[in-house]
Image (cartoon, rainbow, N blue to C red; front, side, top):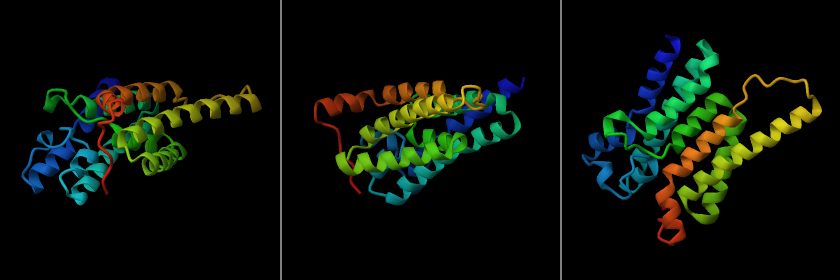
Length: 203
């Protein structure tokens, strides 16, 4: 029963389309009819309203963080299920016919709940890659891959130092699943990058 409640709670939290809600309320536009049609912060930025984009980013991050940190506190054995369902809720929200965002901000919120060092690494990598290449999609995919790779090596180093040490929060497989899902949600961006038609970040 607890697992069912956590699944529904996490999914529903993740499925709140903040980008759509904010643009509807404050500029009376449907974000799905603007730019790429995505409900995330990057597309909200294309409305020209930086404040709405920042608000969308923060709210999408918070909705990833809150349910996971609550689950971790009360039912830590279900924390990875909660994390996955929050992400799936954002990417496949029932309210929008399962056509949601790409999940990057929500993934970052989940990372903050699971591992602050990994979330800092994600932000640092995203900023560096975006400053060099100016593509949000490339930065997001590369950052999620970096977090996965560093986690794999980190665990390997720990086991080399002390093979008997048990990792209580092994999130390697979860991070692998997230990376695959983030690549999946960016499949159109990958095609655009190949065709040199991907839009660059404009601040």
